[in-house]
Amino acid sequence: MNQWRLFYVAVCAALLMGSCSKAPLEKIPDDQETPAPKPKAEDEAPVLISAAVHESISGFSFSFFKALQKQQPAGHNLFASPLSLHIALSMLANGASGTTKDEILKVLQAEDLSGSTLNKDCLALLETLPNADPAVTFQPANAVFYKNNFPVEASFLKTLGDYYKTQTIGLPFKPSDLPVINKWASDHTNGKIPTVLEELDSNLVLLLMNALYFKGDWSTKFDKNRTVAATFLKEDGTRMQTAMMRQTDTVLYASTNEFQSIQKPYGNGQFTMTILLPKTSAVANLFNQMDTQKWNALLKSFKPTKVGIELPRFKLQQAFKLIPVLEAMGIRNAFDPQAANFSAFSREPTFVSLVQQSTYVSVDEDGTEAAAVTAAGATGTSGAMYPYFICNRPFGIIISENTSKSILFMGSIYQPVAIL
Image (cartoon, rainbow, N blue to C red; front, top):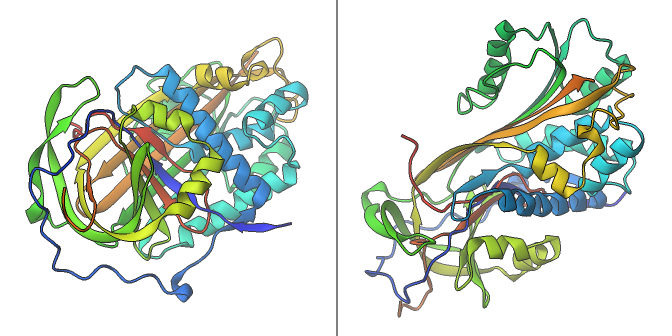
């Protein structure tokens, strides 16, 4: 099996739209500190998965984000985790059979993969990503909550335990069990997502959950003393005030007719945030045109460049109900009580009645903290010598681990405001 060093995207970010001033309001003075040295080879812990699974994760990531974007109001912030949903759906596929399974695998762009290949590479991600960079915290977790009087196939639970390292918990699924489920989410996101479910449907017989938690300090932090109040131009042409972080740094930089982009690394450089700043079109259009091929071409086009960077400080917390998104992507039988086939999960007829994701992201002078929880429930039946990169209008970010290429979070930030 061919192994690829995959580029792991950890934050998918928000591109915002607006007209661009041709020069910064004021010249950004050069930083006095020396840019962080390039990581040594011995510091890297490459995340190796098969080429086919890499293509599955990357292709699904962009397809999912485009579909999610269509369901959201224009000009609104958007931050999601493709990887969290990919893992949750991969777990779900292990309980599906027939056309139901085929549809899930097709949406995952894994229809040509054997179940063992997908499961083994998901296990590789879960085991190796947390150790990719000792200076960055990345903690994935999975759980299976099932109704303790419902007949669940032992082989299904064993597969999830072996390949997805699931914590298996039997509950009566009464309203009093809701705090147990929400506490699991909070415990595995460092308290950033304290509530996943507002209520517990007594008809649920299964709840699959994935949690991802990321915390990384910039390799070169922003100086808090240089953060200033600045104007941010929103997509509708109105303006808002934001806290703008500022620095001059040597980073990977690329420029096309449509957008500018930089990569700002965390820790030893294995995880990275890629920021996309449109020149003319809307952020949504930029993401709509992005796919795995264009993403890989962008990665190859980056060159080390001294750049004047202005990036707003922001914090977001969001939640999405994903069944309409997944239906639009091609999963239908799983949500139909008459057509769903989850016989590998239980001999009793079941269908998926709940798929939702909660996310959190905070970007400041020190670095980035991000989290996601996905739940899937089943129911019985300037003129400088270097370019300026000033994010004073809608922009996009992608966080990545430079050896895995697997996309974690994708989003759209239209207003860089803090959670009140």
